[in-house]
Length: 503
Image (tube, rainbow, N blue to C red; front, side, top):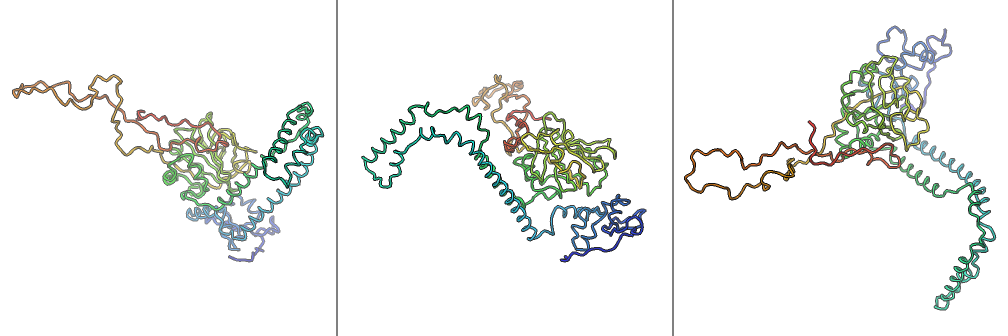
């Protein structure tokens, strides 16, 4: 890698005409140039006549300085292999070093100290105003006189006090006298509490400060533990490690198998940004449970788990902020595909337009809270919360078909040894056949016996097999912090060992 940054000094090919003074900055890497005559663009070319080629351009300045991952960070390649590689590399940081980390932490430290210093100055100003009001009614002479304890105080502070029955008797007498004094006459206090409450407009909430301090320290610890974290979801090039927390809410107790069995059915950067490719996934999107992960060009990552059979289990998640939101009971579906889409309409809707993805994958928008429950969360701007901007362009989309959450059934035969069939059975209640069967002991028996139509073997009616709920059945209400729960908890599967299996 070149340590000294070099700069390009060549002016645009069209410098003599409309691009005077503009230096070349971009290289168009699409193999087929089409009708255009050049590959080297200046800013005027890039934003003007050749703007349709922006996605195929790389940054020449970064390229000549050896920073290939920065140069091709936003470039669309003809080759799927290169495209997937650079898409993955984009989410990692090969040029960050110890100096970067040092600057990152130092910047955080300086900003924190500056905030703390401002807070300290504000608190010092506030305490003056606060005490000025509080001391008007707490330091009144009649209050101090009423609770005055000079005699008792002298004895308590006596450095020559010796432990003896006599001295303790004297000390206890002084204690009794003081208690009698402060319980004698409340009228002498002359306290008008209603007047005090009316005038005391400020409150010093020390407990709030302690709680916030604790939260800040916890967040710093999370920052320390999560900035570098292990990652097991190898099928995705977009998802952050928070996907594992999302999966815990989807498949509690079966997370490892669930992640392993996820099947990717669509990746935009691999299959192209033509909305019709999404329409080809109609069968999976409308017939299977899916996880959709979206990354915007400003590196925001969010998505949705769409549960077809039990829609209330569907969740929307924001991976950068590590938050999730449950689908509202009033919402009909978590993910909708537009089969009648064209370039002027939308192709995907998440919730009730909580997210709208346009067919061009540009100028998409969100309005969080329409179809997903945001109660319990601090959402300052519902339109910008997911993408950090009101309108956003899509960098990539991944869609995974999720495995069926099959119940974990006992490996022993599913047979009820004591079946409850009829509360008044018209059969021998003892399943063992009579040990003294009625048999003619005379060896001369009827040689043409009439078959016994009433066999001694009980004739059980058709019995259905019992169904068992999955081990760790998904119940998001058990996995969410109650303080941030944003939806009605799901109803667990009834624990009925004789529930008929659906055919």
